[in-house]
Image (cartoon, rainbow over all chains, first blue to last red; front, side, top):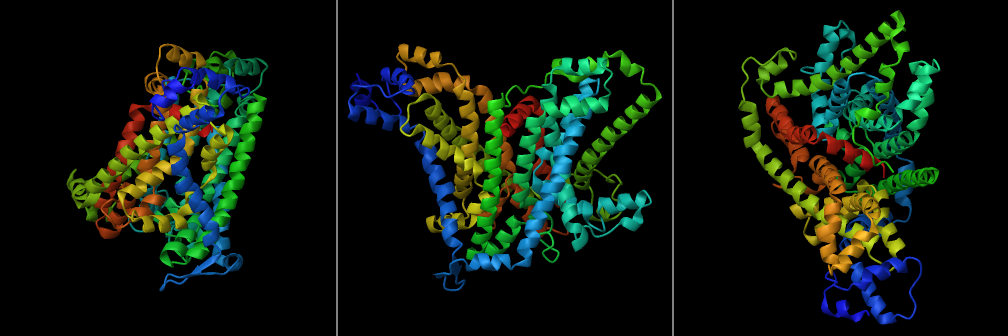
Length: 331
Length: 299
């Protein structure tokens, strides 16, 4: 019953009709009385479907990750290229490195402000848009707000580099024009404003994306709920808190996790706008890793920063997994 | 799962509310509220659109005009900077971006679709562990693997080549893409496979002729998500192609900036050329974008 296809065809080219049928039964329990060798062969044939994915991920995603732990216990000699085992020295160095703590703090600030604008702000905005009567306006606003998300962070970053530029920059000129010229300043050129300016750009670029997703989630709320609330004399603000918010809770949770995870992986916009300056005030973990690894060639230290990043992103991913699982059970 | 995502005006809450008589009885406060909401929404439109228009316009200006009044329209709408940007490297960056985007979309989507088929339709040894292994890749941030990857590609002689980007864009997107396709294929009825078997179709034929065409909606979504990713990706592109002729647009723009940093209109023109394809793509297939993005976040 098992030899026809396996003997004749290559891994992908099974003509064996029993395989699928058996495959179904097999989910519940291994069928008895089947020759073990043939069964194993069939297993291997089925494995061919996932093999390309497994190999590519194993070599280029998992292997470097494992290597990174090893790298983080080494010190490289830049000139000879030799490495010596230094144990946890890189991590000790990390704990005493003020720029590392600045970077971590900037990532946290990024996460907090992104939650305020791209999760809370976007939710309110989506509710406002969806409360409009005109379908055409709802569609257009969603689309217009999304456009910055379609252009890359590099383009958005460069654009805002120019907008913040003290001489030709739009921002200072706008402030001048509305009589707030006193507030004009070199936004990216001074430590006090540089990080917040970068984060502001990122909100501009990303809020339309989360607004769009919240709008989709709000559309899925049955309109009867709103009608019932209105008939009970519940005003729009209370409708938002008592109907909209509870019913988009799962989207809110997902958005928060995705946003936090993204905030710890920030790299592109900082690199394009300030490269971490002035005076390392806008370094984030990603750029500090890059600078140590590829500018200073201190690979071991860069690997140690990567390990910290790994632990943080893994924790967030586990939280996401937990959240998704729990949500599935609820539904 | 977040799946039913098409923008459906029929289920819009506003449809119910607009018929509500109370709304029209709110009076003065309601009008003030509405004026406030509209000025906020339209103000936000200006905040979003004006910088983009400014970018497009600056590509038409001369450098002197740029440093003059930033609000002014260009004196004569000259395409010169766009042509210059194109000739000073942007055409090459664009070609590299198109090449990397097209090839990595093909490899990622096919490898992922095969894997998703294997995970949902075929009995696998250690099936659960296999799924966990592939999908576990979702948790790993590219930055974490950066240093070892550079060493690896250097030793393989692939550092600073097109292959590096193709491999990395494929490897790091397979988990996510497989996850989305798998979630869709799981729900396809089993009877389809059985019918194919009865008709004497092989697994291979069943995949290409039946399962893959049936998965078309999710394939469109993952293609859009992958194009958006690979067109805009910066970290790998910067580390693995800097200083070569394989620079993609995001990296190319920054080198355009450093090479012609004083000729700003050219930089603006380059930015417009880089941004335009995806913006146009978005407006053409908006429906699929919305669907793809909400499927992507539902992971």
